[in-house]
Length: 265
Image 1 (cartoon, rainbow, N blue to C red):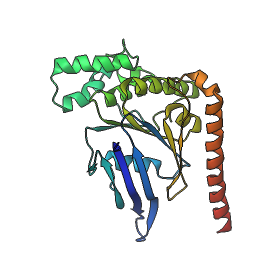
Image 2: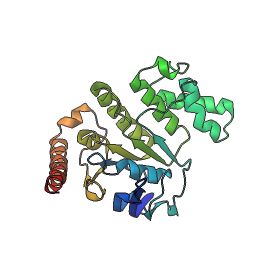
Image 3: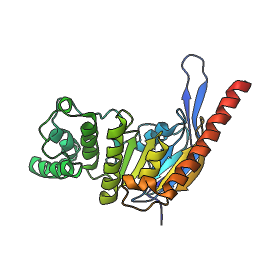
């Protein structure tokens, strides 16, 4: 079966202002993601995870290589792909209801239908009763639930999530991980997810892509052997614990190699 998303030999360089040089953020990335799959990008800070996500989103262009969605090269942002950012990115002057309706309005859906669809997704993320609240009137976790509902409401083929829980406290983060696991299982959306957290990646994903330090390359890809649906009890599964440890060992080697390289310069 052809992958829904295909990254082919992607390299990305950024010019350094003032000296004519450049920094290579990504090098030779190859990756395939199939429809309905939840794939996490995991790696040390600065390895290019978010850069790769932004290339998939169409916000950035690869220096070399290309990204295909269902065989068509991605060249710009597209309604078939929506993004959930770390900082919520809700419109502060809109209620939760209006924020969730925003993408539907852009698609030209009539107001009555927008309202019904938005309510369905507000219920999906368990925000029923908060439709008329403004972002400053709800908690960080609720804002992120609203952002997820807004991203899902236009019915994209692929959901891109860039460290969506990074700004949350530990308890809220764990609760939202369980929510996203539930939502992804129910909606069967394809998800590409960026995170620094090994446990988060294992808990949510079908596969975890471990990237090297800059320039980011694919170091290894691990399939998560833990059955769905996943709850907090899943974290006690020996297969979960073993995979977390194996990924930690791989990343620890990466960080140590980079540290030794810096010391020897």
